[in-house]
Length: 250
Image (cartoon, rainbow, N blue to C red):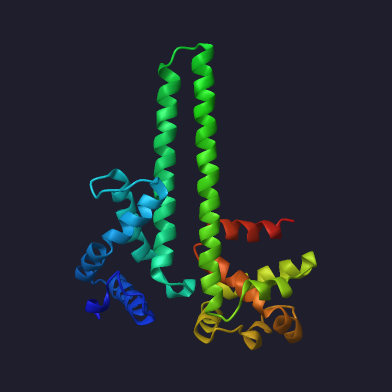
């Protein structure tokens, strides 16, 4: 199996082999962890470079951040996320590197504010720098949102659900949306229901009837919407999850 782990191959079989390797690592195979990390250093460098908009060397601090993030992704990955490991790892790496860049930029601005003379030109420079930093934050957040959506789209595909399906099955009433979200939360928080969802790739309607005050007919009609919410709550979707939880407060 280990010979199948390479960056050049895109076959589904190889991808499944990586997920299996991650499980073995989580069970304590440290040698395999070292092999995976060494094999995927080019992947880590590529992801970090895309965030920094420059070529990243292994000696760079940003690469070290990416390496640690990749290792954390190995520890935290679960097939319950309904996604492939590399997609999950990419999101984790990008977030960590962006957080690092933000912290470093903040430190530089604090130091700059303490050392520059307090004249009009310096004040203007500080304001422009802060505006540039805010612009960077907005652009990076926008990029992460786009990547979350693409990652979420792939997860939906494994359940034979498309974005068009969600649009066609969107819930127009606020109470209906809240009931769907609460139902999805019940699924995610119940081990048996969650395993059924990810193993069978369908909603455990019969089991849910016993736990929610929603008819079988309504559960069936809203099943795609509920599944989509459950995928978001189960996965590493920072922005999408905030959006969903915000709907409960409306």
